Length: 113
Length: 113
Image 1 (cartoon, chains in turn red, yellow):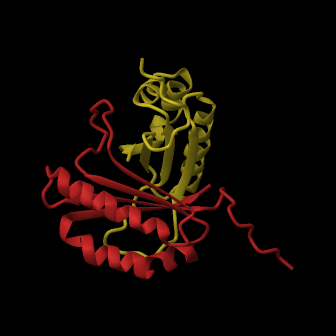
Image 2 (cartoon, rainbow over the protein chains, first blue to last red):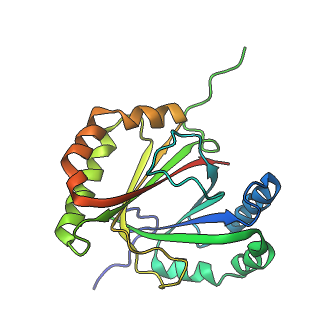
């Protein structure tokens, strides 16, 4: 008999990193509305940890992508939890209320190793 | 007199997320060499936390970028720590020993809010 995977293990957790580009790329007001919206997602129980951010003032280098506006990084215990998050009412409400703000979204889903 | 910023505060920390594409895109051996290389970076003292990953088996959606091979996510207390990391000998050694493996690198530098 195989034991159930322990909760909060880090070696196999899923990181879900979303970058948003704004329709009004230079609007601090729209950026801050989107930041506030992303923060509402923290109430979704499947999310272990959430980090919300904006472009950092690091050195400008060719490899650095700095044209986005808002970053949303979450950790989940499993693919199942990530899938449940996608359909959670708070997430759907966030999309309904904020999708008019963004022009592009890029998502990276990462399995920790 | 202004106090020094506390260590380990999370609200202003810097996340540095790097995605690598391999020259030999389908080589699990090269992917695993690069994963092992990225893990050597954990000895750099400015790094508060490091997460190494590969593409997760989440649902394929148009917004999900899944053509990369290895993900390196780090957290720093400050822009200064991130800059010091860039020039740390262990980081330079990592680049020297592994840059032949990758064809493209994309970096996102995030200021948490």
